[in-house]
Length: 240
Image 1 (tube, rainbow, N blue to C red):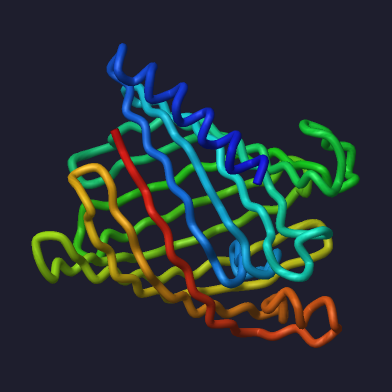
Image 2 (image 1 turned 90 degrees about the vertical axis):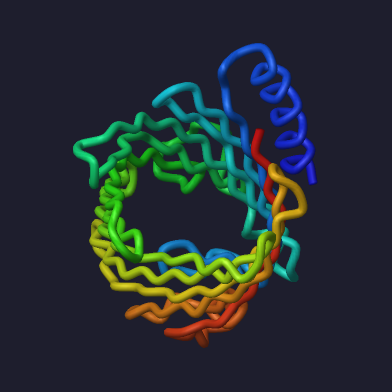
């Protein structure tokens, strides 16, 4: 709850800045029935919120996850801080380069990266292609965990009315770290509805796969993890 209040405070402050300068601001609040990140289940159900500001080609933001399931006291809390710079390579190809700091409050203090699990730094680059199905490719390197991730994805949005759309997506990735490696994939479908020009809501489902049995957080704790998982999400987002 503190993280959601912090996100709201940051959103109000950034909105005031956006009114005074040429800054675009977006914010979101979501609920997910299982928190899955790159094919690995990190927590049971969670409330997740984020706020992001962009000025020209520069973007910075913060993202928060708070576990609300039976294991919320031991897992599910996360704070991500990130910044990136975007530019076009051609009329068809755009790219982002940036850095993300992942912080897990149960592991220690903010910006503590001594290997105790409190936080990690990751650099990344991603490419988007102005082609059918909007293909994308991304590469990530975690400086703390010494883990390399490669991910590719496609997405497509089908307008069903002036205010609604049916959105589809799929991704495949691989992770290669110090003493561990696995492959993962996902397919998602969601229904979006625009409340106003600036505010929208969605309801969706995602099916995730993992080659190393790292899905379903509750069953993983019980020693019976799964290699596939269907989970659900709903949320609201706004941009100004």
